Length: 245
Image (cartoon, rainbow, N blue to C red; front, top):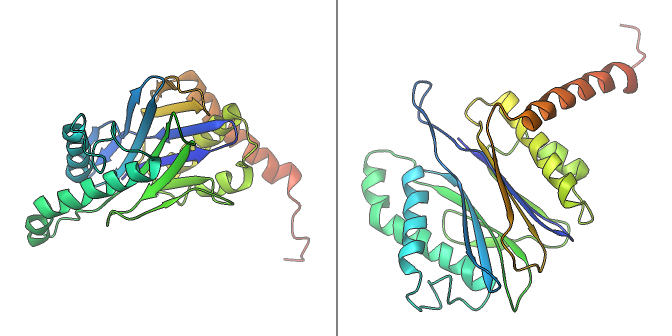
């Protein structure tokens, strides 16, 4: 299992992903699920991946092979828009299904995946997409300004309550990490290291990246402070029902 979140704000973009891959209680591995491609001053793309690891790695390998091909439908350096970039990722997903999908179905292997794509071209707007296993996709707009993939249910409530278009990048990072803490608290198949990527809208400069290990002081402070705050709110702030029980 995995957990990834992408948040699109007025100020820019925050992406976060865990690194745990679980194939059983005694088969836990660490793989990076955040992939960033940048041409400084021209364009950048960031992809978060969840699902079958061989499928997601195959998609990233195909996208890498297509770079510099000049094909505007596949080459991320040649696409003319973020919409075209999302279509390229969808094409790569479909290609991997054609290559391996039938064989894996014969062995009852779950061969599915989902992706979050974010990026900006020099001539366009910062955009965020959720790409499904079939290669189709939706875009963040209007009231929908964040996407999650993987183990999404535990970390969603804090995002729904806090995240607004006007939320600062710093507060969005803090909220994303609380979302991860809630998820890791309830599901041991999600775990550190956690990768963070922050991009300031229209900067066309490399984004800020950091990897937080399980022993990271700030990650520990999030866990301790959030747990204490919830306990205090439960005891001191939220009123009891007042019923005679």
